[in-house]
Length: 207
View (spheres, rainbow, N blue to C red):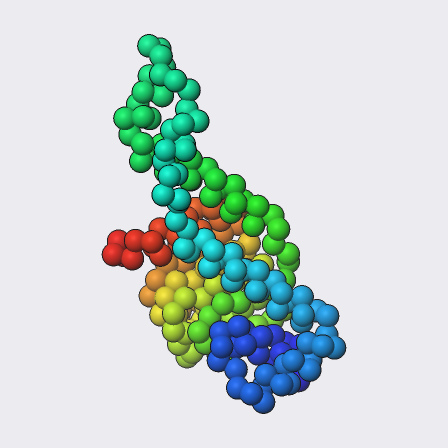
């Protein structure tokens, strides 16, 4: 087996779908291959980031602490007065600024390793030399397909969103995509994408 095959097993391992025999082979390979160990580590960092941002909840006294830091209202300080009259908006604005800073840091900390997230990794063609992930014609991928540090070419069907982070999405005339298609190449697009994910997780009824 090549490193490419073991990296597919790493995805199964992180998803909890790997069997005992494949897991034993993977663990032996990881002991000998530093590149694959780093690949697993980077994927674990991404998963930890998503999990941490998907359950963000402000402390109970967050609004009061934000308001306590605002200057005392004066006759000419209309902004301060307005913010105290609308504490939820003030807290949301501060939260947005702090979260944007955290997401921006995660953008710059990312390495150039090709990362693929999908429910059907075995049906995808992954070309790490060209940093390209292909959905072959006739193949149906269930759920979202997310690729970081590479491009996506869709010839078949995806029953979800197709997202290329620091890459592009190419679609053939035969492509069928049920969800949205996003190419995220700028830091502001990354921040907006992550904030939308957080909003969808916290407000599932808004779908």
